[in-house]
Image (cartoon, rainbow, N blue to C red; front, side, top):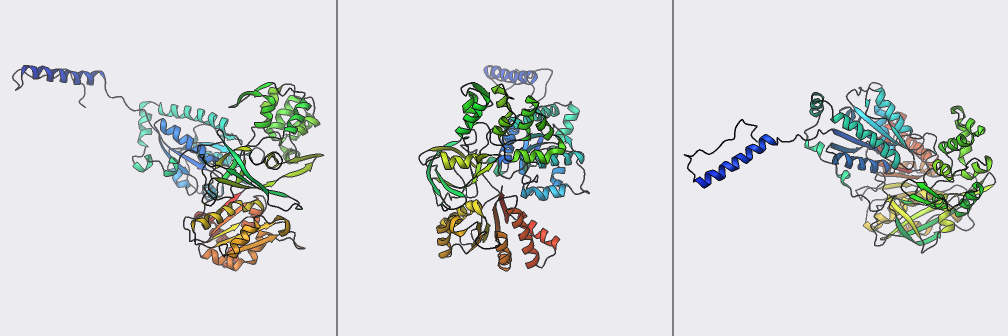
Amino acid sequence: MPGPVSHVPFIPDNAPFTAEQRAWLNGFLAGIYSHTEASPAAEPPPALKIAVLYASQSGTAEGLARKLTKELTSKGHVVTFLPLEGYTPASLAAERYALLIASTYGEGDPPDAVQPFYNQLCMEHFPRFENLSFSVLALGDSNYENFCKFGRDLDEKLASLGAFRMCERVDCDVDPDQPFSRWKASLFKSIEEIVALPAKRAAVTEATLSTDSSAASQPEQAKKKTPAHTRDNPFLAPIVDKRPLTHEVSSKLTLHMAFSVEGSAVTYEAGDACAVIPQNEPILVDEILHKLKFNGEVLVQLPKAGTLPLQTALLDHLQITRLSRKMVRAYATIGQCLPLLDLLKPEQQSHLDAYTWDRGLIDLLYEFPEVLRDPADLVAMLPKLSPRLYSISSSPAAHAGEIHTTVAVVRYRSHNRERGGVCSTMFADRSQPEGRLPIYIQPNSNFRLPGDSDRPIIMIGPGTGIAPFRAFLHERRTLGASGKNWLFFGERSAATDFLYREELESMQKDNFLTRLDLAFSRDQDHKIYVQDKMFEQAPLFWSWLQDGACVYVCGDATRMAKDVDAMLHTIVEQQGGLNQEAAVDYVQSLKDLHRYHRDVY
């Protein structure tokens, strides 16, 4: 468009136009040039090239990263949305702005697939990050000792390497919504300050933007459809089946629970988890109200839920069966409870862990009575009741319109009180077919069947860890996969605890389940576990690995998963003729090639 001029051009009288044509053209030119002078083209607002990176184990970090990407894009910024799995510190060093959402997993570790990135980041000779501006949102669970440890470590490591914090790290508990919003508010303010820099500084910032069209294009995974049902908008699913999988004389109860999602917008893939929003035990809630002498009908205010009766808040919205450091601190501070205040000292951490391990709110009320006088103080100290995640044990191909879960009912006695898992006892004692429960799907993109249906798979899942492998087997069978299937399953006794026995033995009989290795720990004098069965079959296990098998592990993270991982390294070292370092590299290569997957908790 022409720039401003000192006068408006016109059509001369001797031009080959009629008087009417000259008048029309002169008016047209006057309009163009008067608009050019009065309304120069507005400069577009400055944009930043921002990398949104996530380290996710169960999908929460990925979901928050996707929300952040959408909001930043709507503000005009050029955003790349990527997992830290497969990402390199060198790529991070090349970024100008990076926002990292990091989940802590296991005992303060990064998610499995992100461990290589963090290991490389921690190498002493790695270059510094003076040109990087960043911020970290850390996700964790305050009931665990190493709360948000990976996010904290990542934040401190980047700062130590010279990177600049755009805003301070925020740590999120099991309900991340409020801290996520607080982090975004601080972050967006910082970004606004960056784009509002003086023109010279802004020009330098703009020069760092990549003109590569691939940077501006969103990865396909960033365009995934938002689930129709979420934690804040669950689906009320009818219970269509509830039956015990263990014998009535077993020392434990494991249930098969099935929900109907027929006609709903709920969809899932084999490997995903079903999130159930539980309700606390009404008898316990009544006891708490009685001990506090609070009226259950008094109205209290909860974030998002709004104003509701205290009894409803305790039943459906607040965590009352577990203690955290935050809860103990709030209670001790209000009542100046010296024994509790002493437990909160840093050097007393192990004693605090032992105290909170098997106690709940009711224990505080009996041990230190007459502390809480205001229902608002009670509500303020209690965390939000979190959903319980159960690996889905059904296949969408084989069990259309249904979601199955495999639930171990948790019951125990401590401090002269019978206790149990909030959700599992709800299933066992307070849920019946024809009833409805609020559920939604928690995707687990890191725990998927191989895309190649000819590839063999090895599944290791003792106890309820069998759940996703039942889903895998039914999925592969229904879709006609030709790859071999090997399952390691373990429990206490074959006579009482052989979960899904008829199904598994039928699949083994017709050779769809190529191998079924069983470890019933209490059916002989010495205990046998799944890792022992792995070692018994070490040569065959190694040959399956050499044939390209994918390995899947599901179940307890504290002991089983560590023992299985150690045995995998042992098999690789011994059968492959490798030294310890080479065996570690081999197992890492399995992870890098998406051939070693773990869904442990």
